[in-house]
Length: 442
Image 1: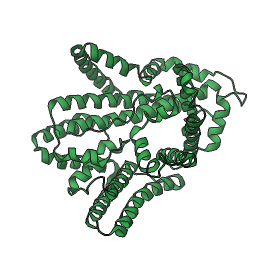
Image 2: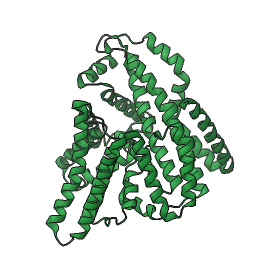
Image 3: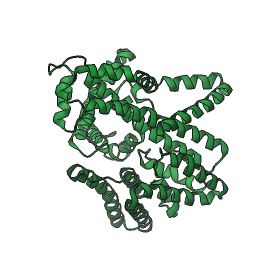
Image 4: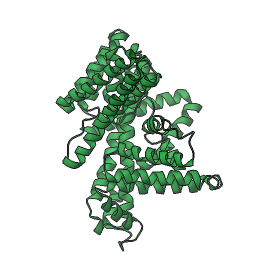
């Protein structure tokens, strides 16, 4: 039962909230774990046992780490084997998907990375091993988080599970965030993805220059709205049930540099990689060569998060080159470049990167690039592009407005200047979004 299904929205969610409100705070973790298991099993069926096995194995490994404090070699072996098993499982499923089309269970990457990070924190003594299996299962397997994150640090999240505070005010705030995320996913993400599919169906031999640019722009917007919408839904449900989850997307298309882009796009994944890869390998204290190596490794791993395939490796290398260019070549002159020009340059660079998502192979991505930059002799415009622009201009305008961050800026302005009016307007807007989104889901 998906988060964006009518059954979940109008049946399971209200019943679950009502049940949890009447339960003692300490019992709510049990209820939310049961809800997560039920929703996951309704989608992935027997694969829920795989996720449960990963969670149980990490729980037992962390408990073992806590019991062998005086045996450093054993602790090192347990931490290395357990964290390595998590990462190997994620990579194995990714490789098998590429080779044999094997289905990757929903949220496997989120669970495996969260578990590996938790084991590393236990090993280095940043957190104590969790005694409550229910609290551990809730942090690891909170169902809304398994779609697209956000990734969480165990030490910051587990205290919330011991006494999950619910109130009408938090339910209202969480419901608002959830509905906004649902609208992002259903109206903008899914809607723009359908435009991308129409454009992608045209072979690149017959595609015009503007055709490919529009296709790549639609893909980047749809990915952003789909992922950020799912993360907002997870954050909203977290607030409803008493968990504060971090923000994962913050207007990435407002970025004026590549580093700024990664501080806004899939924030928690990038922070996770920096903490457990970049910092762990000593890059901040190392020399220039060490820094370059770690930037390359970090960017490649971030790319592989989106899929274990060659295009994602190249995606990581592409951003590595841009980050290194900013760090070593443009650092002194960047401040002299007007922000508007820096934004334009960053936007073009980011859009070009999504060609690697659009191509089913590296060769196809290169062919798309040749068309985009007029190296294939293709026409500039096509009737297909004109038709799609004419029939979807309102959706595209709303998407560009939201992606530009203007909606967040306007909301912040009205919240500061007229808080009471803003609260009423925000509630009304949420109800309108719920009605419109429901119509799209029918």
